[in-house]
Length: 569
Image (tube, rainbow, N blue to C red; front, top):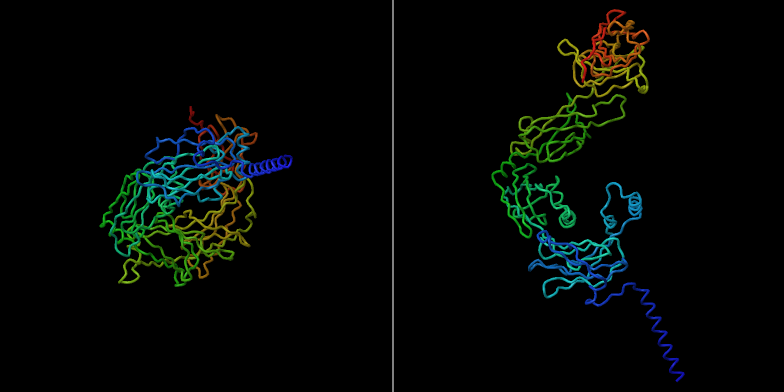
């Protein structure tokens, strides 16, 4: 008897030890499939439904402990179309430590400002699991049962035999859907009859916002990223009778391009679960192909045949800007150019180590290929070529004499300011210069065009110095000139209102070049302003609350009687 008791005691201890080890090795042991839906109390919530079944709801299984979960769900069919059993997978998503800290700080700060709808929304899928699945007699597919490891979020995905039916569900360990309805997309068949060698592409444009809660963005990114790009400016190539799917149901505008030229755009209303045919006009396709050309641009130095390599050429005529660099022969090509429309290009010129650059930083050109370019050959009129001569920068080399030019700009004092002028039919007009560069004995100003030029140096709005005019030709491209010295004269301006000098009044003075900064000066205790080195005969004077006055500076002493301005009220 005692021996039998000992044997029973040993058996009992071994059983307890085995139970203890099993309990700690699997905190959520897998129950039979029939019990999987009874782990906790289910609660009804909206499930992942088809677009045309948004009112259908599905229960969920809750898991308050958020530990390992015993997962089982059904993928419901859409009529005869059901999920493919070998396509079911589950993504395990986790929140990174940085995102977790940001979330915690946002919550502790009272959740002020924009933030995620939930902590799980911050999670990123790091691992995918293929899930066991079997088809049931009713056409649905049972997934699991399977024990899932912990994760901040789960993503369930599956395909079907149809290109329009997909299964998508996102959930957390708190609760998972018991049933998942299919997301039903739409398809579009492109019917066209272009020439055999044509490059045929389509762009897609939404004419109505899609449901923000629908998973179309992620679905397209996974199943058809080229279609997602077609909603922007990345046209997708199509062959006759090609089917584009999956697409969100609803209204859409489809743009057909032939060799880079828009041939036609048509509206279409896509229906969930159906492939819609869209017929394009063959005549319009032929017209688009006829006006599309390949354009060859050859850049050479003006007056020579020397090519200019490494120019960055940006064409603004396509759906989006296209950039090419000229090759060693100075050439660059663009496809799909409309020969009948003006085409704009921007040139970013190459730079070197020269003290004075050979080229402006940028230059813009525009022309119409049909009238300004020539066919490469008589046999091929769809390839056009244009040679563009570019003039290197010329330089006005100005000796500035005693004019002080600071090495770096002085705060609150923009002077001296330099303005380039060009002789236009006997009068001097301001023209643009790409560069003003300090040189040993003065400053160099770049010239974009031929002709006579001079430099204006503004020491103040009332003190301007002019250079001697340049010659019209120079073999070296350098035109030496000198500033003409002018010491100017002192002028005292007394500012009055109703005969009384305005002491310590803020005054703004503007010279003859209105596009340049004005000078702000306060009158002294006698209401006077003393200017030195005055070279101009007139300037504008303005005091707040009074009209702008035109002041004659030909005398050394000037009295300005202010006129009250209109009351703004």
